[in-house]
Amino acid sequence: MKSLIARIAPHHDPQGWFRGLAVTLVAGLFLTFSGAFGTDDAPLPARLAYWMGLMMVGYLWGAFVVRVFLRGQRAMGNRWVNGGLSALVMSVPLTVVVWAATRFFFNSNIPFDRLWMLFGPVLLVSLALTAINMLIDARSETVTDAGPNPPKFLERLPLKLRGAEIWAVEAEDHYLRLHTSKGQDLILMRLADAVAELEGIEGAQVHRSWWVARDAISDAKRGDGRATLTLKDGVEVPVSRTYAGQLRERGWI
Image (cartoon, rainbow, N blue to C red; front, side, top):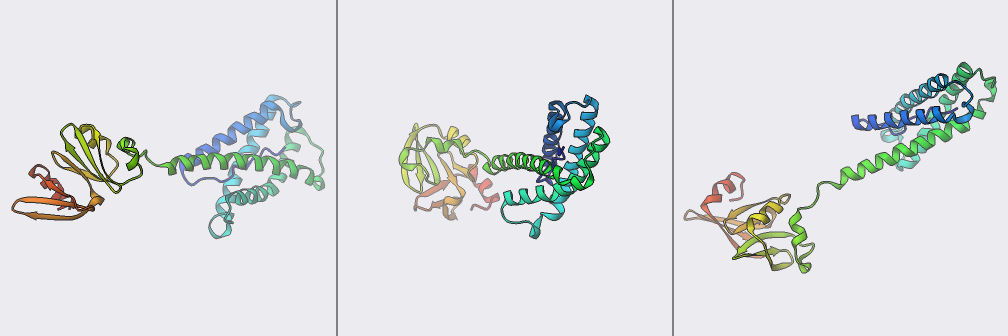
């Protein structure tokens, strides 16, 4: 009778708390309908009240333990060590709660001095739910850290330019000349389509035939009403009046 699966690793973000609560409720329903730990002979309403009550107590107590005792300097460096430690800390008082709830709902005759008989099952269930919650958290963090997808245009780079930084894209008839940190090459594509697929890289169209990446500019010159950008490889890119105003506002020239 340990269903006090104290929802380990509680979160400070709303989504994390809701995920933890969902795991707690699902576990409580599973233990209820499976009649876990010898409770299958009890009426369904009693089992439901018993397991769901223990699960909610475990959820709240687990949140308190992790937040108060296992945050900051008090927590060890390894997250799995933290999880095991928090489950151990939670299981001690929860064993007493399970003992009391079992006596109340099922008229258990386990004497108080035999509490150690319940501690093992309580700790086992706490560790199981702790692991489930931590795995869910880890998966969520992985998705978050993955970030946005890279610009689609990078998939069009020829093999010899894969992994290079895109400095500029220059229109030449029906082709585009790619200026990159690994050299140049041509691909068949319209500049307008390329500009759309370059979204995600800080850059701008500076001429009807040129798109330039902000980090690729090593120098910018203005004179006689015209502006010129110099790329890292020394290539000079003209800036047309159509785009000059926007570039000045952005501090490019």
